Image 1 (cartoon, rainbow, N blue to C red):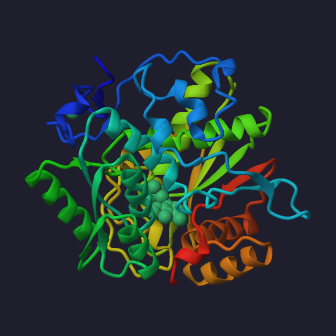
Image 2 (tube, protein in one colour; image 1 turned 120 degrees about the vertical axis):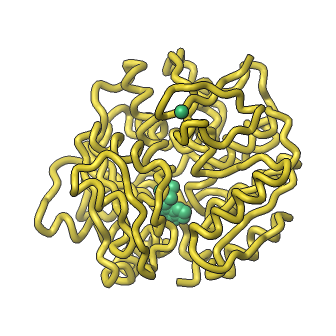
Length: 372
Ligand SMILES: Cc1ncc(COP(=O)(O)O)c(C=O)c1O
Ligand SMILES: [Zn+2]
């Protein structure tokens, strides 16, 4: 039996073993709608990784190989930004085995690939997702090939190859890289471990939400600020909170503020024009390489999730990114520019729009990995 994929647009279902990437109608694939049975008491409190929430994940009940794959990812701390701002909380998601929040999605997606008997994966990334997939694939004994844009940080490339993955440098834009990976998947027999296409990735990033509830003893922040490129953290967090709402664990969703780079903001553009889907934009060079996605394939879902929470989309002023990075470093947090961009956007927004109540912002990626 096993869990199915389901088209976001027409509802058609597919068996993940068939390795279909998109629906015949062109729609993106989600995990099929299902009624989750998960009691708070069923959180495995003896498991110090995000697999403590395995009961919420689409694995067969006797599946245990994740134990060979996990590196203790997740369970990142939540601390105040500083003692002058007790209502501004940060979640330390760069404290992961491969130094970014992408470990959440990669650990679960690779565990699922193992369950499905996959021998080789292909993935494309601006860096962090590739680092994470390469590390977990190696640990799972799965061969791995990662496609990255030519300008990717040298440290990220070194890290991917150190995990034994083949690195393919692709000239041109991030979209050219995605196309090259997709072509390779279509030609060969590898499983596409894409954080954009493959919905199992979101089953990992959703643990962000479960952790927030557990760590804050149910006292959820009113506002969650999230950087958005392809939306893997935003959609994952949304699925997590949505599930907890359906399970009756919470009584309302926190409001999402999505942050995009000023020079590459298709979700922002669609949001302010009150459109339901995104249109590809021409991207201008930005320091926030992790969120510079000109054509987010899950744009429709991202817009709908933000609107459902009563949220908004803002942009990060490019000239403020370096300042924000330095401000964070002076608080003790050495993060990469993409994370600094989230704060640049937030600080800029609150100048004219003070926010009441608790705000939570993730520190998504570690500074030492990036050259920018
Ligand atoms: C550090 C960091 N933050 C945020 C993001 C944005 O994630 P997404 O593209 O899934 O929205 C990325 C993506 O690579 C990233 O590396
Ligand atoms: Zn469809």
